[in-house]
Amino acid sequence: MRTLFHIPLSPFARRTRLALAHKGLTAELRDVRAHPELFEESRRLSPLKTIPVLVEEDGRILGDSTAISHYLDRAYPSAPPLWPTGPEDAVAIFEVASLVDVALNGTIDLGVRYYALHTAEAWPTVKGEAMDRVQRALDALAHRVAALSRPTIARSGWSAADMWLFTAEHWFSTLPQRVSTFAPASQAVSLGWRLPPELTRWADQHRDRPDVRALG
Image (cartoon, rainbow, N blue to C red):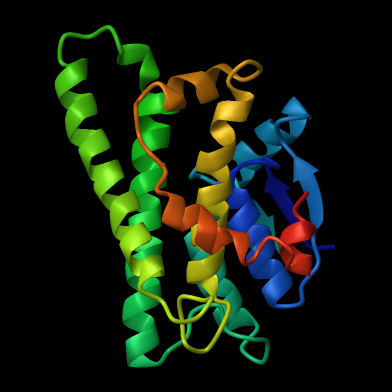
């Protein structure tokens, strides 16, 4: 049985689940947040020590959501592609995916991984530079989707770029709701980023997709 070690609300895990669904592949979900022993197992399996981790039926193991998505396109070429290959679509999808990761990684690094350093003298400078990059990425994404004449990033339809952007919008938009129950959410919100409304309006078009609804 194919297995995915995941965290239910992680944008990286959620976009991997959407990628698997797009390929028509099923996986047993193992929640490492709910079961610490699964978290330790995932860390033994992948040297990256990040979530998600995919374990294929034949025992192949791969971490990192972007690497997993590119692997899936090569391992299952007869299924719908995650990353369209046409030059115009390629420019759009890779730009969007890169901007999404700038926004997510910048916020998670400062708000979660390195927040313990927030009392350091250099923190205001580091935070200012990092959050400027995050906000510029979010604003650029808003500009891109506002200019679209279709619901999806690529002309060919739903792709990895849409999955990356949709799950990022969900993560940013729901963080304030988790402030009272999840300390890292409070830390991430305190950084001062702003989610452009254009991104929420774009995401609203896709919330009733069966694969999106299956994320829970």
